[in-house]
Image (cartoon, rainbow, N blue to C red; front, side, top):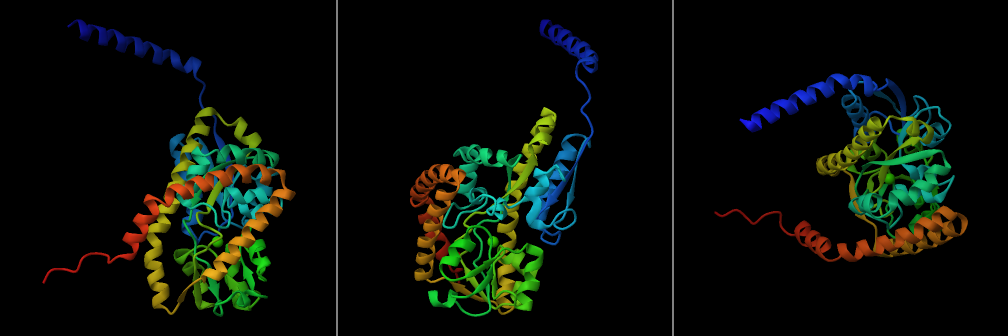
Length: 366
Ligand code: CA
């Protein structure tokens, strides 16, 4: 009886507080943002991350915080999203930061470094390994703040019109490739070109390039790369766990109400999980269709992988000599990478090696 009485009083107290609340808590403002994506709409896993973000933010704010998503080319070309966010053309963008290594090579750390981290390790670095803090100073120089928003998992090594058996086969090869890999491959004689996703098929079909890498089976099939090149190489050693990011204009971010910031960050984290899950679920069927349709799977040879790795670390040293941001982040990242590889060599690698290569299940009893 006594307890019930207390609850009743507390309930009344709460009701009185609720009545007084409107005078204290101001209504959240209506905010409308535009988001420029680096990706075309038909690549639903990549483009879809921005749609998840937009939907969640609207739902979480009861429709008051709206983010309208624009595909690559609708406001700005796919490779100019950072500029558009920096100069305020749009409030935010969804992109692969390594598209901007021409401005500073350190942007590569936010997406993928050749022979770098896998998807899980990239998340570990960003969220708990000092990655977000390390990247923040770089993005701040460009008037932006960054939020991890998606990962493709380890990528394929691309489509080639002829076989790449030896290092000599790479000499003079004109290839679409993104990030620092272009510079690494240049050391091996490849002529790298950065081309936005929606334009790769045409370049390969017209013979402007001899080879192209994009992501993996699900996306590559959508782009139709299998129709213009036959040999499908793996692994994409330049992208062990490439991460996409939402970048937001710093002034816009600072002006955002606290509640909207919280919703926005949660939505980015959700989209980060969903993209990888989506790729992992969709890639196997796509790979079966591609191989069924005549794609020839090939693994990069060990000499090619070793030469590429050696060239990659030379590129990293050169970048560190040129960019203070790269030098600073590289030292921190390299130590994290080393510890991650040490740990993953123990349980992860032995589990993967045994289970992925053994029979899928014991033969059925007769
Ligand atoms: Ca790629």
